[in-house]
Image (tube, rainbow, N blue to C red; front, side, top):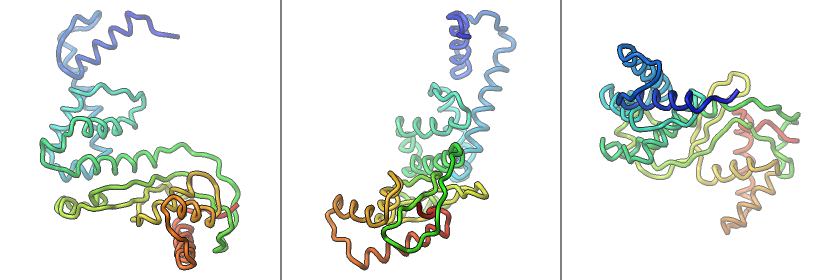
Length: 249
C-alpha cells in the first residue's frame, strides 16, 4: 500500500527535524516529546557508525569523531533504506565535503572506505557456488574465484592502525578484502599492482590463467614471459590456500 501525500509530508518534516532540530508544524506531534524523538534517531545513527568504523573512531579520538557523526547527522540526507548500509553514506559525505581538510587527517576518506569495504564484503548476499576441481597449477584451467571479495587501491596504508604510519607512508597500496566461506570472517591482504590487476581480470568472468595473463599483456603492453607465468601460478596457489580461488571448472 502506497503512502498518502500527507503521510509522506509528515515523515519528511520529522526527518528534517531529527537532523536539524528546526521545528515545523507537524500534525499529531507533541512539542514536549519531539526532542526525545531526535535524540533516539541520533543514537541509532551514532551506534551504527560507531560499530562500523572502530579504527577511525579510535584514531580520531572521541571528540573529533562525535563532531563528525553529528555533522553527518545534521547535514546529510540519508538515502539508503537498509541501516547496515548507512556507513557508505558517511564515506560519501566525507568525500564530498573534503572533511579531512578541516581536521588535518588526509587519510580519513580512505580509512573510512577501507572499513566500509569490510562491512560491504561481510554483508554480501550469499550465492550458489559452482562445483570445482582442485587447481593443478595449469595455465589452461578455468579458475573460479571466491565471489565475496573487493580489490581496492589506496594512497595511504589504511590497513595499519597507526595514524603516524599512515600519514608518513603515502604511496601506492593494493588491498584484497575477502570473506572466508566457512567462518564468514572478513580478512584482508596486501597485493602488488600486478597481482591486483590479475585478480581483477580473473574476477570479471571465469577464464584460464593463460587467458588472463594474455589480456594483461595486451592492455599493459608487456611481454608475458615464462618467469611471469610461473610467478602467477605460485600466486594462484597461495590464493587457493587462502580460499580466494576456490578451484577450477
